[in-house]
Length: 406
Image (cartoon, rainbow, N blue to C red):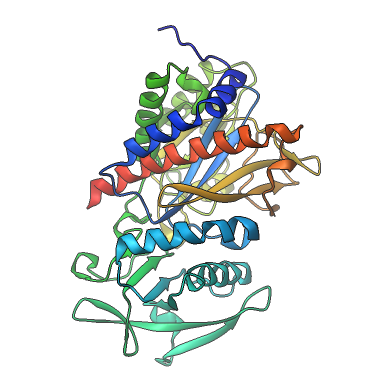
């Protein structure tokens, strides 16, 4: 099939010139879908394409967003919360349990302020009893930047999420549920976004990128665009056991098959389908590298956060980033609220090359100013539009994931 838009330059020009049509298409595609309360999308830009390479349903990192973007996001936050409960006055944030990560506490402080600035009373609360070893009502913490935070012990009363005597009108889930609590969330009356039923205890990257391909292909067909311009090729492989070396030949064959579809010298990312925090990822240039993995690498690929054993793998085209910061490779993470872009940041890794996994040891973050990733100021609008497009398509894909479990 011949397409009208076949190069990255043509894609950028089209998205910028026809943004009203693009935006109208996205809004139409979102109708009737359970768009997550918020999300973040890691995007790679190469010389040939833009492609999402990961999607987080419970994003951390709000502290890395520009203050101007956070100010502009206020009405979107207000509107999103109002959709969940128009009469809400009290909002609870359910965090991760790694309270010793002071940068994560900065994130919680920023997210809390973002909601408080819209006039809500905010409580951060948890059901993790390990945080309250003496059955304390709350614990006091100080973030990396010196913010004082109080995390309360949450309770449930007649299906309502509570902090002491305070009933939460809305809860914002910021725990990825890779180690789910023994709570029947279907019995909870308090509106929660995003749903805790789509955590990493059941979510799969393979399913997400399957939906993304569907969403991206439909968008591309509608506007006569080569779909390869907005996605990375991938293959899903099941029933792999790195500990016992079972299925490695099958995984290696999938690696070789995908590499044969790419330009010479390409690499692929082999990712645990349930991996989070950059865990369970290897970058390889041949199936032989998979088959001959040493024990240390196999151990890294075998088990992830909260001892989730990885048996489903995503083999994903390695999209070589052209974005640099201080001569180091970088990629863009875009943040969304109710499927609308609200800003982003750069992930930079001085220890990796342009084909490496940047979400690994050595990574640092920089607040994203579009002027830092374009050659000319006039390019600002184009880059912002394309990154927003990719992130919003990925979030539509995540809504299909949520629809599966509701």
